[in-house]
Amino acid sequence: MATRDEIKFLNNPSLSGKTKKYCRFRKYGIKYIDYKDPDFLLRFLNEQGKILPRRITGNSLKYQRKVAVAVKRARHLGMLPFVADLMK
Amino acid sequence: MRQYEVTFVVDPVLPSDEVKSVAKKYANFLEKNGCTIVHKDEIGLRQLAYPINRRNTGLYYCYEYQTETGKVVGDIELQMRRDERIMRFLTVKLDKYGIKYNEDKRNGLIAKVEPVVKEEKEDSRGRRRKFVKKDKPAAEKSTGKETVKEEVVEVVKEAPVVAAPAPEVKEEIAVAKEAVEETAPAAEEVKEEVTAPVVEEIVEETKPAAEEVKEEVSVAPEVEEVEEEEEEIEEIEEIFEDWSEEKNVEVKPDDLKKVEGIGPKIAELLNNAGITTFAQLAKTDAEKIKGILSDAGSRYKMHNPTTWPKQAELAAEGKWDELKKWQDELDGGK
Image: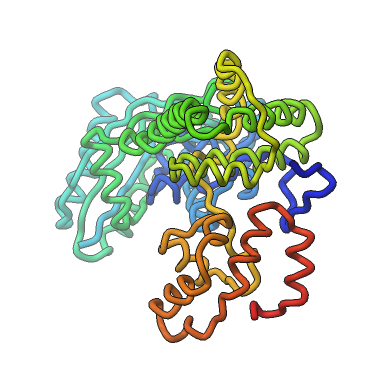
């Protein structure tokens, strides 16, 4: 069996054991994001109530925008706060 | 026919008859203006996320209605704006997905999301629990892992019967165990090597599979005792637990594009013809590959695959250095 030095890869193996991030809406075929459901939308906010960036949540652009719209509607209706502290 | 949804929040300090009259007033207004009300949802008292008009709670109502034009929307909003009993309102036009979602919700097809507790949940990936229907993918995934593990265990048990791959496997496991303790890159590489042969066994499960295992590992066979088999199997299971999570369970074919002359389209062709690994490609004659190419169409006929099997052989054996040197000379798969 070849030793570690002899083996060379054309593409280097990834050092980080990262799991592939995916858009959960794309994957499970969810087409509509309800603004009246604050419990679900909380996943996309941080402890201060801010909307999390797409690179953290893994959403595709289309659905990130829909999430943002839904969160803003919920905020208008008083279901989600604009500014918060230790929300989660 | 346009479908709209209006959600409004009524002042909670009002007496209940007045609240009811407010709700009725707008329902009547909609009907009078020629809308068909699809659904009236009285969500009830809710805590507000921030105080509105110095009130901390509100009574939520949601009406879904259909109209021909959108004219009534302006009128109803004007009325709500003038009404002092309504704290907030929002009108949304529903697209086909929204309509479908509301229907499903009324039919109970959408599960309620439990409020997120601060403690860490086992499902670290944060799989969506919302849609009852869509829970299947998550469930299927977990069963998929288990079935593959079982298959692997079975195959490993069969292995000693065929030729003598058991000793090789044991050596691999020993190396793999060391690798796990060592740095990540080494571990990854060993994993790749070990998964490749065993994965192929799953795919083919014939004698040639055992030969391929030998080829890729090329260890001098030693005679081992049967008692040690069980240890191996346990160790393999341990290792595969980690791997299956990473590799996402599916059998991974080799990347045939690494051969000079094979691009994504031709790789697909070969995969469809049943050639998914380097070892398989190494075994097929150039003639046969030519046949596959010409079957696919005149566009592919011009490629000359004479060197591909030899390249694949080098790749299968892991001689990447030699392969690279040769490919630099080849230049275009000739």
